[in-house]
Length: 266
Ligand SMILES: O=P(O)(O)OC[C@@H](O)[C@@H](O)c1c[nH]c2ccccc12
Figure 1 (cartoon, rainbow, N blue to C red):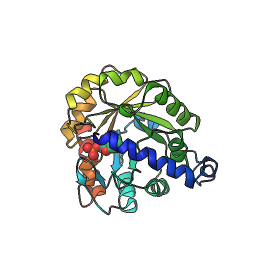
Figure 2: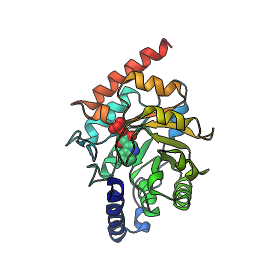
Figure 3: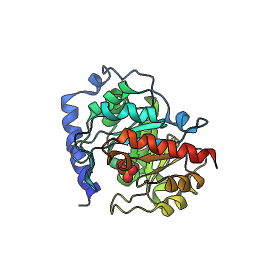
Figure 4: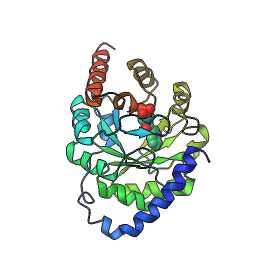
């Protein structure tokens, strides 16, 4: 089994256990279930937006510990103050050290749209995303078929959440549907962990025009950011580059300032 297959196998068990613990009906009584949440599409496309989606991630299968013990309280308000366009919060516990509570807390700490970074394979998890306060869900092409992609994305839209659909190769373009607002092109191959910006740029050129292209992973310099931006990407999902620092919010602030400075001289 590769890592992705391992994560999905574990996720199936987790979802079954969660359904036993909290019913779908109970989820609808969660505080955030009826929240009106801010839109990623609007935030990213608004004038002057830098398109940066800053991620909260304590660890990952490829890197191990990135920032063990990090708290949302210490980091999310600083990300927001730095002027990013949105936030991504990992909720997977076993492989990424995240929790649903991290997202709920994040929702209370800022006004920005927040994406639930999770391995979604079951409609239950979409309802859960709504209950914990997500603006958008991540759907990963590599673990879904066309039918699942359609069912999960349309459910998200019906709950007034947007969908960030992650693809990695040309074959996965076939999975896109009209319930998808944002397409994430993962620069990192989730099976081998290799990062390749040029492959993402080639793939972005083939996206339907109404979907907002987001570059994901391995972005670690202003040069990489501007290279992707000039290739047409509107959003930039960045995790490790900030999280690996002792003070991720300060790193984010420095990066945003650098981008702003260089943007004004473009
Ligand atoms: O930390 P990075 O290299 O900046 O990457 C962030 C984000 O793209 C990455 O965490 C990610 C992309 N797709 C995922 C799917 C599941 C979990 C995590 C991810």
